[in-house]
Image 1 (spheres, rainbow, N blue to C red):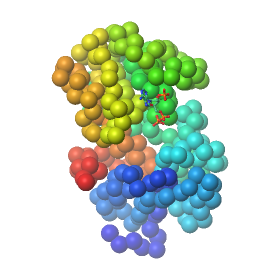
Image 2: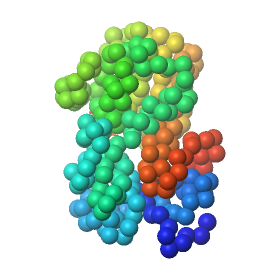
Image 3: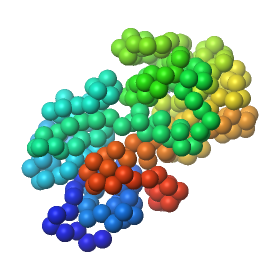
Length: 278
Ligand code: ATR
């Protein structure tokens, strides 16, 4: 589709940025919905973030995504932030409104929408959730699970103190447990989520003993390279329903696309294929 002088512009700011799948994802939707617009990878050094954001506004961009390492700093640079972004302490979606930046965080939304799409039998109120990891991704997922009404969250992190401060910070029914206390954590659980980098290509595998996990529990890994991690393969073999991590990436992109380009996009098998293409 040819760009007119009125083309709507957006992009993703990161450092590095070459690995980001967002340009491919939004590019697919721009073509699918025949939008007069473009979405660019924008490589921005951490020291230049404030300048780059002013530049986006000056250039008439509709907004942008922000990824590592800018998500926390970008929140501070927004004139306004949504309640969920403030609680997560990071933004991933920026919208330019009346010459200023509004920041949002759609990671938790993407996480929940992915489970809704691919595991419609799982309901948040069903039972305890087990979350592995206490980094930025865990924070967004915990906020989403709390808001969705999960009755109990068991939070396991290698560095237990990080899990404890996260639990204290967010409030609600989050119980920090020792990394490795699999039996205690998994007993009676309805959901198990890996938010750590373990199992990702180039990282050590996630070694977890699943024996105590009910076979009805849903297992989700937010790692999507590879798509089927060892955790998901092991869970599938014992009969648990499993959901891979790619859908979280696809669904978190929906609110930004709608704000910038004016179309509410769908996550389809064709989109998954386009994003996975090598
Ligand atoms: P992100 O923002 O992507 O969540 P992060 O903040 O760097 O990334 O968090 C990475 C998570 O993976 C953390 O929970 C980390 O545990 P620590 O808090 O103890 O560092 C977890 N992680 C990374 N490598 C790990 C390993 N070898 N064993 C167990 N957990 C690991």
